[in-house]
Image (cartoon, rainbow, N blue to C red; front, side, top):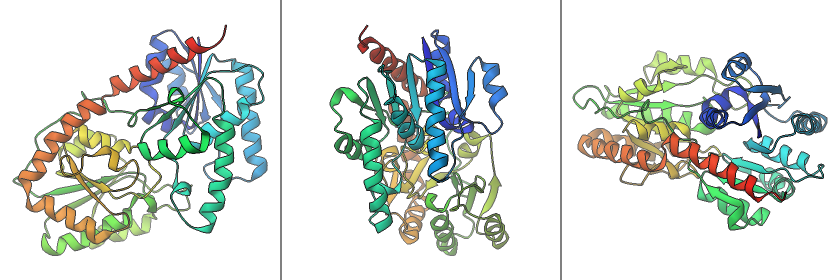
Amino acid sequence: MKLLFIVNVDWFFISHRLPIALKALECGYEVTIACRFTGHKSELLEMGFKVVDIPFTRSGGGVSSEIKTIKAIKNIVDHVKPDIIHAVTIKPVLYTGIALKTFKVNIPFVAAISGLGYVFTANTLRANITKLIATVFYKIALSQKYKTVIFQNSSDEAILTAVAKLNGADKTLIKGSGADLSVYNYLPENTSGTVKIVMACRLLKEKGVYQYIDAAKIVKKQHPNAEFLLVGTPDLENPNTIQQNEIDSWSEQGVITYLGHRNDIPDVFSSSNIVCLPSFYGEGVPKVLIEAAACGRAIITTDNPGCRDAVIEGETGLTVPIRDAKALATAILKLIEQPELRVAMGAKARVFAEKEFDVNSVVNKHLEIYNNLLSRVEK
């Protein structure tokens, strides 16, 4: 059986979907990865995957560029002749769904919605216009006969169920891409030293970086020894990136300790006390919060779709309103000043991760989806 993954970029595939693809290989699938490659092509080839380039742009590249991408997807599907297609994130889902409408055969389609973006929640004129256009695209893209739409949070599920008229058999809820609980394991936190708060993400404005910095300044007035860590790098292809000179300025002022890109996130979390993500981005369920829970750390995040799905409010962490640095600072102060509460939340977070976020469970659910879809195809 041939499985075709269509994803925006290679590093995202490796970070969020690789375990599923590896399990599919193990189960006998021929797996092709179609995406924009940034340096991981040979790595994926060595793992046993076939690879194909797709010219996905990071932001709007103009109508002709986007049409070119849809045509490229159609050509890839025509060449690979997959038995099942798994598209991940907004553009791959929409463009693959549209491309599939040009085929006479009904190819089983798995559409993974990892966050709808701001357009379905924002109320600006531009967002409302974009929402109308996106609604039409989703109706077309998700009108396949044999499909399963995977949602990561109930807010996205409710919105797209109404938009695309999905029935119960067409959708499922899987909270995020999971974490390897043997890698992101629980180590008791150090409660006797300096309290460390860490934020790890792509350094975009919508991830709440400015709110994190403002909250750090407030907290440090009462607890000057509290250490605020920032992990990640600017995303220079994104117009909403945080700039390196801003990061340097915060570091020089002593507001944060900047760690840059790190490959040892389990160690970073285990040596910290609180994990913070004040995002107002269009999240699915942020992987970093899943990993934080797996490491048994109390979480502070926003009451934002996806973010709030990663915590049990008041038990495994705290949620605050979006774009509210004062509320964020208050939550951080609470967990600094109540270490027993913080430790208890971390312990419950690990239990929650074992129940909801085990990557092995996530992988098995995806293989079940493939099998169920293939069994529905009319022979």
